[in-house]
Image (tube, rainbow, N blue to C red; front, side, top):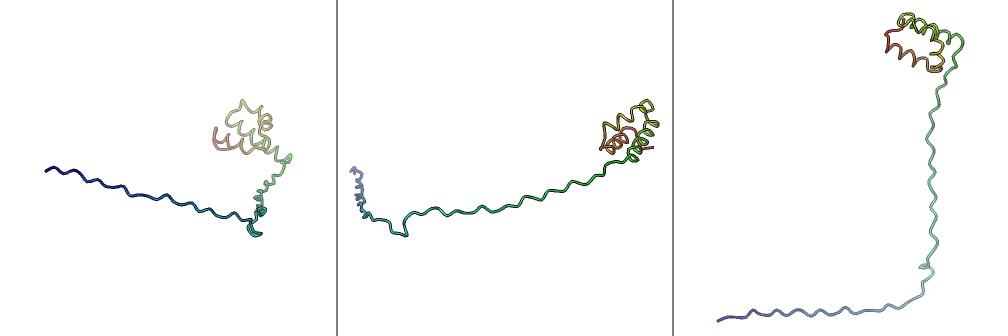
Amino acid sequence: PVTEPTKVEEPVVAEPTKVEEPVTEPTKAEEPTEPTKVEEPVVAEPAKAEEPVVAEPTQVEESDYKTRLTNFYIKYNPDKVDSADMMLDRFKGREEVLFKSLVTKYGPEP
């Protein structure tokens, strides 16, 4: 004998009922208020590092640079002795940078 499959009945789902809530006037506590202003925190600016005080070279120091540079050129590159003043003008305020580069290029300072 052949049996037919049994039918499963779908359950009946009831629609949810709507409940209307009564409209009421807002009470004093429920009334919207102005948003509270929050003060921005005061942030201190970072302290600026003070510039190192560099003394202006005196005539004696400038002549010392010229003597040092002239001695450098006499020992390592005599053709440039006449250009010592021009080089010192070009490196004014950065003379030690000049001497470091000369040591790198030529060797120890005489």
